[in-house]
Length: 101
Image 1: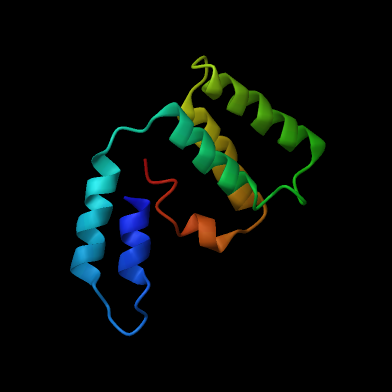
Image 2: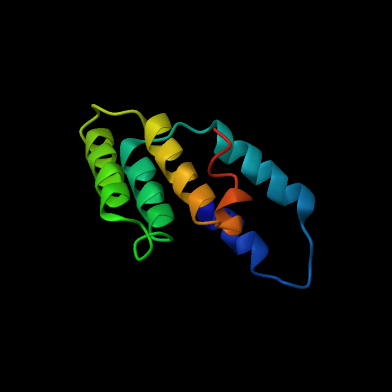
């Protein structure tokens, strides 16, 4: 779904709003696999890899490992990332759909 959205948005001269939201709605109802969740969380954490404290980094990595082993909550992992986005004032992330669910 990510690639479909990316392809749709390549043309900067058009504004395919309805198609975009249809794809987004489809993506939001899809099941999230552990691998996809871990990959997304790792990319989001990339915004903080140079600014996060050792404690914040360790908290994130510990929860990420739990999620990878299916012992942890994705909701908790995303809450950690949301707190980082709030603490480090990352408007791009705060305005994204990542924290919606």
